[in-house]
Image (cartoon, rainbow, N blue to C red; front, side, top):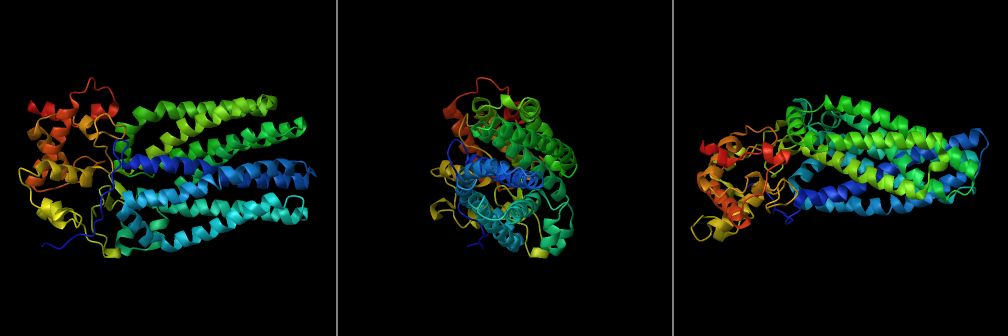
Length: 471
């Protein structure tokens, strides 16, 4: 038996696809966590104003917002945080392993900051009016800095997931070279501005509960400009962020993401700006029936596309441009003693080197070809694609335009995919018999699904169409 690679079982969620499970949990967590970090700075600004201008009534709003935050961010966020860990561990175990081996002490530090943040949030809320003002103000600023510290540390890890930005890390394996990558400061700026926007939008949902009209107007006129400034800063930093992306991210962005999401993102930015400016000019317009729908609109139409774009842009990699989405190590990393696996798989095939292949499927026969094809497709493709016709996550049958021609499907697998000529897709080089099994499975699924009624989506239009290769 050939020596096995350090692969893990493949986790696949039918129809919606594995990535959408992580995405749904992640978007909820981002909304909750960004609101928490942004609100921490809003609290610090409000309490500084209350202390300097002798306006203790502002503390009433801080307490009201803080109680809302304990439920919204620290319960929902604390549930979805471990949920992300569970989802990514089963969906991308080697990606998570790579991050832990690079950033174990960074994560440990982040958990220390998070502990301070959680304790600070509870102490801040429940000690309003119970300790002297200057001590409470120091507590509030400590809470704000600890909250931002958690974001700073996580952004360093997320930025490395996009790419290290140079060859240095591959040679040294140093945590510093991984953390302070070319994408880090731009990404941190985008997140910092966004957190202030989310905190202002959520704060405007809390404002209608304040009975004192003068206090309500004062709070709105303070938090709305903070949201506007944060939004402008985020936009500027996003333009800088685009300059720090690798080539595969630019190709993915231009070919697949901007045609789908650009108008929605511009629309969300415009609506948010108009909303915050209107609130600042006419505080009395801030009502619950206005604030809640606008929050939902911004969270769903704004945060979901933004997070999906960020996750999709780094394809075909999940971390550091050395681990593919299908969990295969794409290149050597001398600094970590890591050896690329693409050539080994090309020579021997998944069936011989993947430890979680049932023995009865290690050799392809006429009777098991369809089952082997399904298993290989899940291993090679399901981290980025749904295998179900009509599914929302880059449906593989739909991308092949429901073709039933096995030779044409195999031609694509032996051509662009084998040679890695598509920037946003991994190089999947397999022996011909394994390619044949995958083509047989996809063609069988396509035959059962029937032809597509129409192909009008940008993804379908840009996808490989085996039928056109007949010409």
